[in-house]
Length: 141
Figure 1 (cartoon, rainbow, N blue to C red):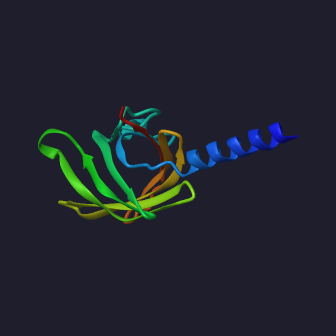
Figure 2: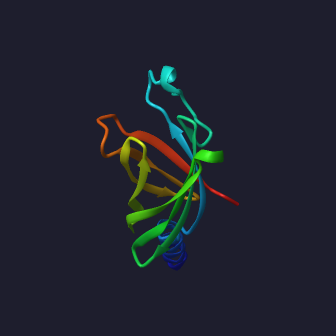
């Protein structure tokens, strides 16, 4: 009986550690484009690109707050924006990134959950009536 209690306690501690793992770090983002988006730069996968925009997240978790930056684009179009309104609790997170473009402000709403060394969720554009896109962000080693 004592062995069962010890084994169950160890399993609980391990699971709690996984759920409460700090997400601080650098992540490479892969966007899953919606079905039928091939003609607009869409299609499955994406290799960290969305319409030619490569994205890297640099996250810092502290006391339930999620801050950092998002590096978007490449070459002359590269820019780094702050992560705002970020929060993380119980393995679930949300934050926003804001881009100033020639067409105006674009706010991207990120929402998802922590799965080991990956973040999985959706990213939607606040100002555009389009379905959200699924993403997977893999932590750099």
